[in-house]
Image (cartoon, rainbow, N blue to C red; front, top):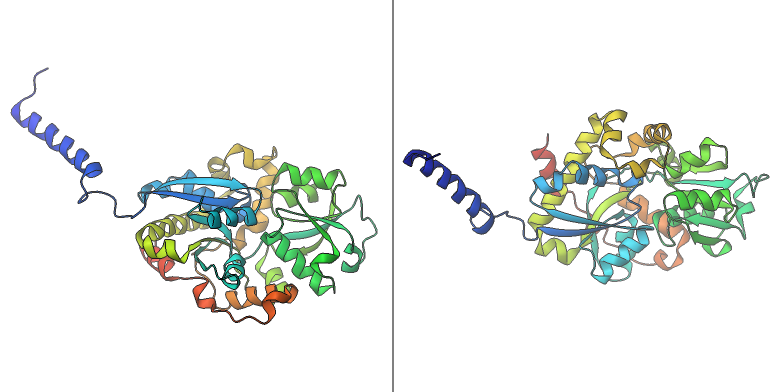
Length: 345
């Protein structure tokens, strides 16, 4: 079929438009760094559900980003990837920003995924059927996602309330999926500090007794004495200074995911998350989602009192932080989140 001159001109114009869109700086994406590596400790957890939603629904791609997500056994391992240079950004717990400032390695959280830790500390009905108080945990083995992670922090904080030091127990890394469930069921650990859907799976068969539950805002406020920021996206100060547009694009995608989650129903969630996240029980997964739904941030904003609450919690069990001065304003920023919320009203 022969083309008329008019048809040829239109086709050639479309070709040039497509070509320059990818090869001419005037048309290229405005982000400084298109390929971004994100480290996360337990991607299957509801704690990081907004990250999964942003990835699965293509929100990062819509912002001109090629995001590669690497999954680790826990948040401490994800932080190590950032420090070691193999990750640009971490999807991890806010309190790491405080710990790293104490070590002279400033990192900043720039979007909040969850406004409650969603971490549950429970004892095994198999190895501790006669549990009465926190004092009974002395000398016991407590499974955490990974030593040094937020699950470790919450467990240490709770132990301090009972007069115990972290050194009074043995913390064992059990991961965030079936391995954690197996460790509890086999008696390898006496207690567990973990998140959903792992916790709901153990609760379903009455294999554990809950001691502390931070899946709701009410329980979180009662335990910590104020709002406790949980999962975030954080990066080094250097990365944020060098790549402000990239960081804004990441924030836009995450806020868009948070907005989607506010309106999504259980059936919507099931359609988006990978099948492996369900741990073989779709009904249980949906039930667990209902328990943590209010913990998900509606807008990505850090609460004003949140950083102070987190610092107080860390100082309660870590003597090395007690006498140090912190500039909490450098551990987080709401500036990019404000812009993202204006874009996705």
